Amino acid sequence: MDHFRAAARHRPDLPWLIAEHVATWACSALGAFQEGASLPTAAGVALHLGEIALPSHDGLAVAHITQQRLADAAGTAREVVNRERSALRTQGIIATKPQRVEILDEQRLNRIALGRVSGRER
Image (cartoon, rainbow, N blue to C red):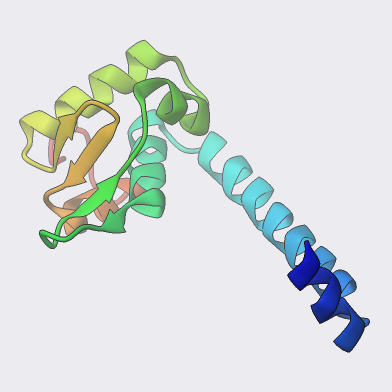
């Protein structure tokens, strides 16, 4: 807090800039949530995994998330997310570990997220 107060003394507009940034982020997050809620479940799960995945030291994109948090983000039940994760795993698109999803095929995951793939082609 001392650093923040010192910075605010030099930039009186800093608190307002931070508030604007937080408001912009919140609006963006709500828009993404609304968009994800209107998608088919497979697309919603794929979209959220792609959005939160970060590159790891081994070059894979990794999403650190539990099944329940993924279900909450996709607006569905944990059992439904479990079925979608199993389908993605079977197709070689992801690998799962406790609280971790490794994205093995980002292109196919993105196609599912965009709804450009039918259920059989996934």
